[in-house]
Every structure is written in C-alpha cells, then in structure tokens.
Image 1 (cartoon, rainbow, N blue to C red):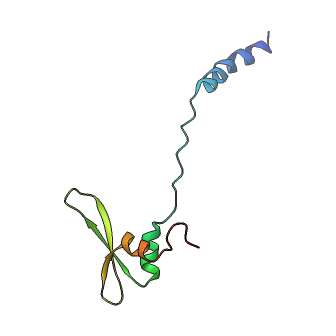
Image 2 (cartoon, helix red, strand yellow):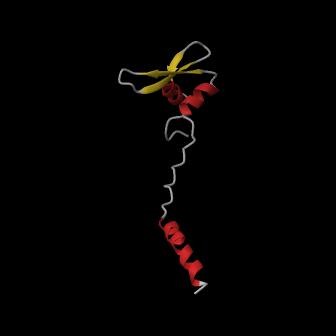
Image 3 (spheres, rainbow, N blue to C red):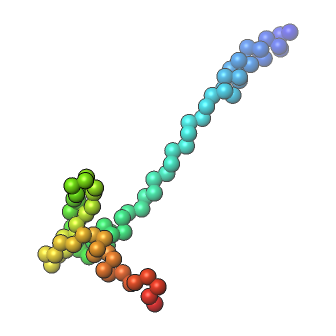
Length: 85
C-alpha cells in the first residue's frame, strides 16, 4: 500500500500533462528579398517606396544617372527573354 500512495499521488500530474496542448508551430518567414529591389541597389540606385491611389505599395528606383524607373520595369528590361539562349 505504501508504494501505491506515491503512484496515486503522481497520477493526476501525468494525466494533466498528457492533456496539455502543444503550441501550433509558427510558419517560417520566407527570408527572400525582392529581386527587383536587389537589382536596383546593385545598379547603384536608391529605392523610393510609393503608394498608388488604392493604397497598393510599389517602389521606384532612382538611378545614379538621374532616371527614375519603376523597380520591376527596370528589372525586366535587363533580364533575358524567357526561352532565350
């Protein structure tokens, strides 16, 4: 009976621990920079964040020669066409 009492005393703790919920795993951040923004900076440009009338965000790239171009337009203009050798 003496060995049964400690077992009965710890049983509720084990039952509660078994019922505890584990926190849901948090999704990992992608950790990947916007390729158009990276391209702008590599060209020596400066990013100029903007918002259109609907509140959508985009960025302009101010190049060292004074031109200001939308970052994705600049990126696409300097990439080979899809399927090109």
